[in-house]
Image 1 (cartoon, rainbow, N blue to C red):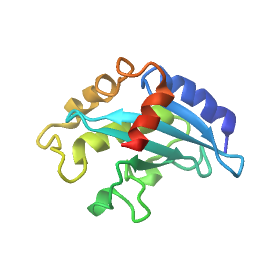
Image 2: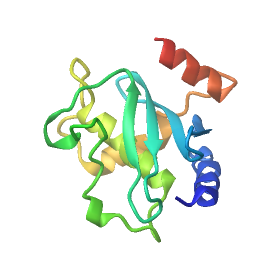
Image 3: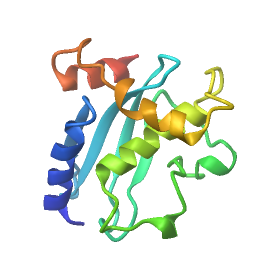
Image 4: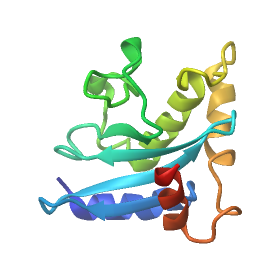
Length: 152
């Protein structure tokens, strides 16, 4: 795991996503938490794990609210299917890309009871990735939003 690269990518992702935080694991590794909001107004907390990074694609779990595996778009262990793992290119893809794909996934598939953006193309979804995820106007401190979302 390239921890220095992950720290650089967290800083880069924070320029596009208002709520991105790096946290240490008990094993001396790192994971990232991000606060995301869909066009339906639902807030999510995503945890990004980095096994064998950057050689292997990060794994994204939605930790709040709790979601269950849904068909072919989420694995049995709960991490999201953002793209085929063999499409991952460490020279081209990074944390910002992973968060963009996560935002797209949440807008496209959502969770039961949420109205997904059915019928809209990928281009329409991509335009949502940045605008609707900025919740900094609601909370001054990024950690404050993540703590509130986890308590909800």
